[in-house]
Amino acid sequence: SKMWRGPVSEQAKSWTLWQWLLFASILLLAFAAGGYAVDWDSRRRHGGFRI
Image (cartoon, rainbow, N blue to C red):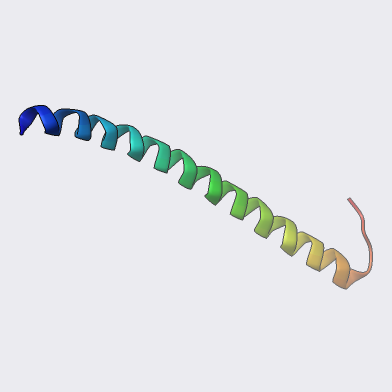
């Protein structure tokens, strides 16, 4: 039981790291997309596409 539990916990540790990296990248992407959408919407409403 202990021999079987060892590698599983190690795998779980590495999986949580990957999940955190994935979560962070998705969050960053969503934040960037949201900011871009709001910026684009405000620019569209004001009629000027100034950068």
